[in-house]
Image (cartoon, rainbow, N blue to C red; front, side, top):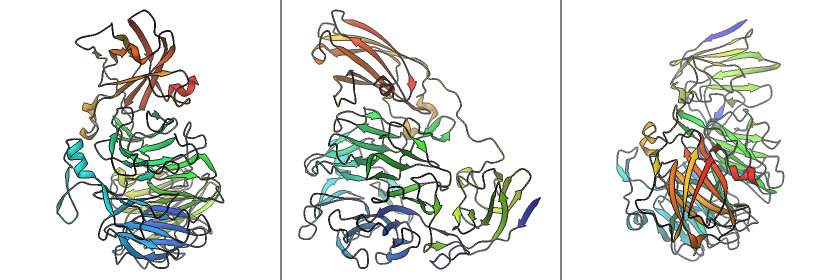
Length: 589
């Protein structure tokens, strides 16, 4: 049987900022915080609607700050020693302070600056670092002292890296130098609070200070272009911290940043083109009761690890949004997890296995029409709206949940009809870009054509050798990396054409888990066969090592290989290694 409706477009999308039982509500959540002293209290910083507070575990929300009419918030954080104190900020808001859990607010510094992220010293909460558009501002005592621009991003790029910040046109038509935006993070080591790390932009890597912001240096992840966004310091091991990148997944250091290893086994890409996959790390939340468990959002998929990133598995499709930007785990009830997305807030009470929307109090979208359908054993209701996300679904007794996964990415701009084919259990959405079909109750949609897939590509093998070789002072390794790999950058966007694509290292047996540092490392642009020189002074004669290779792959993210080697009398040592997906040294442990 077929239930079908014809739709008449309505001109009004937004109504009053309160969600009734009849209309769905949405919000773009950028940051989420659970009150560590009273976990029923949850804060959410949103893009476009302001700063919100819930006192009932997220079941309803109240607007608590508009920042003098500006509702674009990027961040809210809680004082680690005084739970009543909050810091927040957003677009041209300056830094805001509340001393009464959000009841009242005052600007305490940086008026007119856009605040992207805030780092508080857990040992001295009056000491604060703020990531703004121009760079990093620091204050040793926010109650008494002035703010200092301790990291001038544009000046550093020009003076230390000989690079000019690119220009971009804003919505107001004015052209400005590109600075830091809302996706970039700053973090301070809780155990070594003079170490501050800030993500980078198209220069890749990150910026780091180990003297409280007095001096800074730029660092990379194994010498390969990787843009760091998320930063997470391990709460009990001072040598360990993690970084999440813009398109290349998660990485971990066991030796306080002296070297890095990939940590994305199990993550699947968003296929951006037949030649390019993005392994994006966005929203991130650790479980404070278990430092090896954390959650992360990505584009069109969301993930969890319970072993410190060694393995990942995808969260349930009931987390039906396209992008998760902020996440938080209840510190007293770790099975409760919040995910702030581009279409509102989600909540799980079973550690991420299932999710439901909790958007009461956010702005409504007016519904054009609804239909009912029995999908499997579930009686569901579907609603269409004129604008994104176009489709919502709900079961009896639940709030409306967005169900427009990937529709704009597939080119959908308007919708005109929805119907359900009971016999085939297919939900059909009629759009300006063809018909889309869902076979799982609206969680995932597929267009009339085939879904985008990778085209099989293999980079041709090239060889590199220095013009002059010194076999007296050095050992010569003749590296031969075998296996299919793809880093032919002429087939991808120019933004990602940034060699070198290969990192070669000599490491001790047991690396990286024994926290040692590579004895030697070198990058090679794009040659799978390379002769490299290793100073004899860098290794011990007769000692066994691993030669480790890490290769950027535009589809598989990375491939790695290793071989055991012992340095002795022979000056030239051939080394053949088979590249495989995943982090090979994990399997060698």
